[in-house]
Image 1 (cartoon, protein in one colour):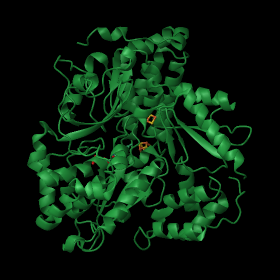
Image 2 (cartoon, rainbow over the protein chains, first blue to last red):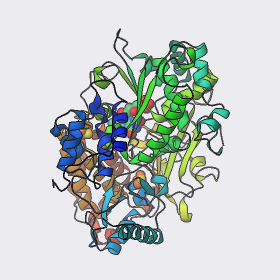
Image 3 (cartoon, rainbow over the protein chains, first blue to last red):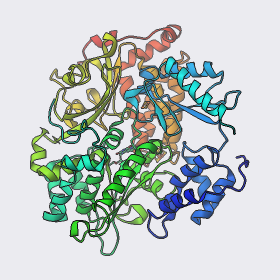
Image 4 (cartoon, protein in one colour):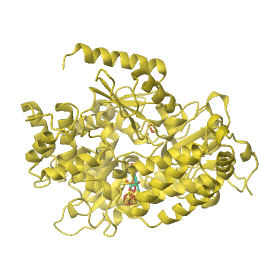
Length: 173
Length: 447
Ligand SMILES: Cc1cc2nc3c(=O)[nH]c(=O)nc-3n(C[C@H](O)[C@H](O)[C@H](O)COP(=O)(O)O)c2cc1C
Ligand code: SF4
Ligand code: FES
């Protein structure tokens, strides 16, 4: 685990959101808000959960840091290593395979010149595979952030990579 | 097309919003239940409806509700299982995305029936945008007096909230879901105690699938007896089927239980047949955990009667020649698909998703994945096929939760029906890399 993000702090608006999430659970059961807060923290602090980020979340919830590490490492959605700016997660499970997900994965690997798990040389894209994302009738598909991109073809992949690349090279770090 | 109880208004523009939903008869079930029925009356209607859990196991919902312990002074909880991660299943997402108020309404009526004052919807983390849709519907329900204190002046209070997972199939298992909702790793608990006695935060808890909860709305509106008239035998009502794979029209369909599989696959009103003019090779009719059926057993049973889309119809023939309705994830394979590859793919899924608590599951799923991988890639031998069956036996019944069985049984079924195709991968390793075995063997009907 890297420790690149130092001193994370939620903005007042995000903090209000975090407090609202905690208030959905009874007194003393605030730990139930952990997963949702980790999702918020990942979005706020660079797309991943660094040790300082996890410690900060533990402090907010009044729990031990190890309780946060345990959870962050169990669930596949949480990144405990810093990924590229854009993470593409292509579904590789049976129903998507039946309609060509293997080809889509190969195509993206070639286009970005990386293997599954790698990050493109420009640091923009990380390619991952995922298990069934609940879009089996609309495959091949991939998830990117909160968005699902369905019925993928090589042309659609080209257009998607192009627009994501533009978005992330024009906006500075 | 059959009656629609859940998706009746799905094509009404704006049905995801409160106003349109209400104008189309929404929240009538809450009015009826809170104004004219006791909680026990609601439970009785659900019992009379014959509704069976739509999450996969098909356990009667009314009976499950009657088991909920009700100790004095202890809160009880209703949890909606919206984890939906069984490969082939995408119906709950469809319902929540397009008609979220139906779930909210179902949660209110069901919580009232069970005497819960705080209920939660647990949704898989990848469905974050769906969470936002449902959360908006919940806020609208609060703003219009359907949630909160003293709903409709009845004296009944209910708070409802939604919480996300973090990417773990196992959290669909009810005790893992409870652990996850407590902010922990999703490790299933040893049962007993059952959630009905000791669930969320040690309190009595009911866990129900999204579709089961939604079905309570028409049951309360029309009465359990009316619901029970739809369907066939012990498979009452309608069921959402998420159809995928090599179909002309994959998607989510609401069927009356008891329609024929043949009509469902081939009729233009439904899936429209196999895509690209190809032939049917096989079907996994209820999500990845249920046994695969070869073409000759998909539309007909071993006895030669029409196979029906119902709990009993799909399981007719038992393990030897039947399968299961499961979650309604209906996966169709055309003649170009490789059964060995697909079996390997599913076993990789289970190996990836095993929580690792019990060694037969952790080791067994990993081992099966390895053996199937080498068979698929032409490095296997004949003993590997028997080895898979032995591993299966080691897992079966020796684990804390049913994931182990869910991983083992589909492999056993694939070997049972497609042994020749597995053997061909051993005897023709190079060819197996280049082309597919096809469906030739399945032209011979099973006896
Ligand atoms: C490994 C595993 C995964 C499961 N996944 C789900 C799921 O995603 N959604 C669901 O409703 N039930 C799932 N179940 C079944 C639940 O444990 C539980 O039986 C169900 O939510 C009960 O609801 P029902 O009676 O309304 O069907 C799963 C079970 C197992 C063993
Ligand atoms: S059977 Fe598998 S998934 Fe279930 S508790 Fe055991 S190790 Fe975990
Ligand atoms: S198999 Fe890809 S979304 Fe279900």
